[in-house]
Structure formats: structure tokens, C-alpha cells
Length: 197
Ligand SMILES: [Zn+2]
Image 1 (cartoon, rainbow, N blue to C red):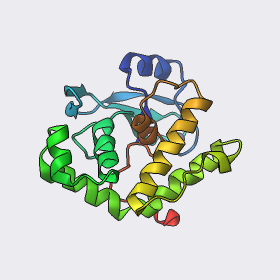
Image 2: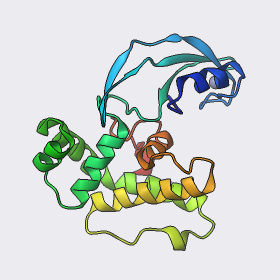
Image 3: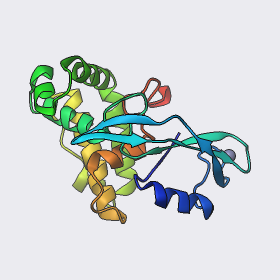
């Protein structure tokens, strides 16, 4: 899985120009058909996604290109999930969050449970990404928060904020930057990898 920008036409242009590289070996990725269309639930209605399949010209491994708003195995776009996590940090329960975001309570409970189980390694991953990017990490490192979930959300937001200031993505939504950093695996099984735990 490789996360790319949301603009499918721009992704096709980059693919044709050989600008997308294999995360395993750094080889050039070429188009290799499309996956099945999926409908994701966005903040204001559904969004259709047709995952682009690619194949590495060097190692022949295939990779699916996932737009940065999508999360592996989740029907809601990352901004919506991220808004739910931020509200949880503010002390909201899953039912109130679900009502606010107009999602089923069971869906929101699923995000919160999944994220809280991995909150400590998620905080570690995003904190180390943040430290690697920042000129002076002591300035941008978030202070310890009231809970592991709050620490993890603070690390995600801190990393995305520094990324916005460092690269040409000043207007990219915070949670899309986070999804790109973990290739959409924020709530996917097996992430963060065990070595980070
Ligand atoms: Zn490769």
C-alpha cells in the first residue's frame, strides 16, 4: 500500500512520468490496472474511490495506491475519524461523537477502541517522525497529556503541523498528512509494527 494525493489525475501523471517509487526497493512503479470501486463516507456525503494498482519495474511487487483521505479497512475518510479522535480527547463519549459526526455509535466505538489499544506505539511512531523532521524538537514536542490517547493525538497533530510548515503541503488537512505517514494504516491490523512497541 502506497499513499498518494487525493487528485487521481495528478497521480496518473506522476505514475506515467515514473515519479512514484516502490516502498520496498525504490524502483519505479507502473500502472497495473485498477481495484474494485469503493464508496467512502466523507464529511459531506460519499466519495468514490477506484484504487489504482501498480507494479514495481525492479522487484515486480504490486502495490495499491491509496488516496491520502482513505484508511485501510475503514469506510470513513480519515478527516472524519480524526475529528472523532480529537473529540474523544476533549472528553466526549462515543455516543455524543457519533451524533455529532452522524455516524453509527458502534462505528465510532470501534475507532476509539482500536486507537486506544495502540495509542502508546502510535505516539512513539509520530513522535519519532516529528523529531526527525524538526530543526529543534524541544520547541515542537507536545507536553505530556492527560491520557495515552491524548498523547497519541498530540503527536499526530504535532507531526502534521511540522510537515505542513516544512513542505509544500501548507493546506493539507492534518489527518491526511497522518494517513500518508502510515500509508493509511492508522487503524489497520498489524500497525504500528511490533518493533515500535
Ligand atoms: Zn520494488
